[in-house]
Image 1 (cartoon, rainbow, N blue to C red):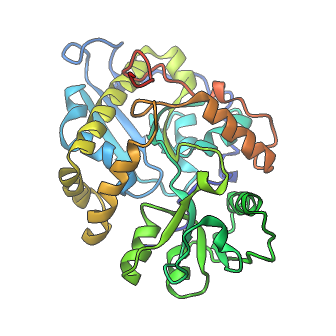
Image 2 (tube, helix red, strand yellow):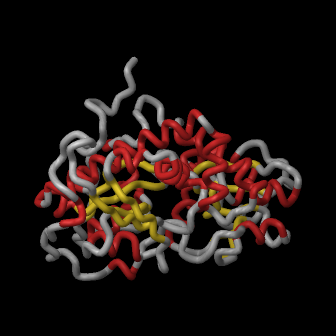
Length: 351
């Protein structure tokens, strides 16, 4: 499946909505203040996904399938958005309780004064990057010289591309680029381009490899010179967290269940793959490879527990966005990231 329009992060003009003045709204459906799962009243949460159910969401769906949300007395409804702008907009307007979104979107939302905060990492490593056709047999990044790159054409694509060129001391003439829309995988399969930026290593890289029956080479964004970032994060309404104890309690319980489910899925990749076959419309051969691979990626955040957010890394990435003119204000990561609702005393892994 190619990447449809709407997946992937970019500045969302649709997010320029007036929600800065939205006050805290009580959520009767969210139960009562935090207590033990056995004594806390039940709650219902509507969670906006970033896109259709796919391997990125394996921890969420495994937690639901295995009853982790139920044990926290939560009823969780996952909703597929009709547009890329919906998840954060709905959380900011209190039309959804939580959303799955992208780290850059929190910075874009910050400069529009949206009441949003990242409360957990869903995918703690970059998935985007450079995916190279297996026909080229490239083994190192800078061997891309003389070969073409295709991307959808959103501003972040150019930032990734220019960072790659800077890392390899190359010019745009030495690595010609073309806009291919969202037919990213197909542009490689058809031979239109030699490589793409904007595809995910756990999606398009696998799809191209399976179609061509030869493994692609891919270089995640941090290997292009882009600072490390969390590809997907869980986002809550910051104003409601401060003023609505039942909502804050429900968010804490959701995170406890989600992270427990993620850990269980990481220990049971075969079972997690079976769950995603039911939840996702992706093909069985694709899921058989992508789900276990995605679960391995979830563990690749050295020194941090699953779901934790690293403030210094967020600030570094925000500064990179500003340097590439994707932000017009100075980013303040501390205002849009919190680990307060995670079920850990410390996010650092014990030594």
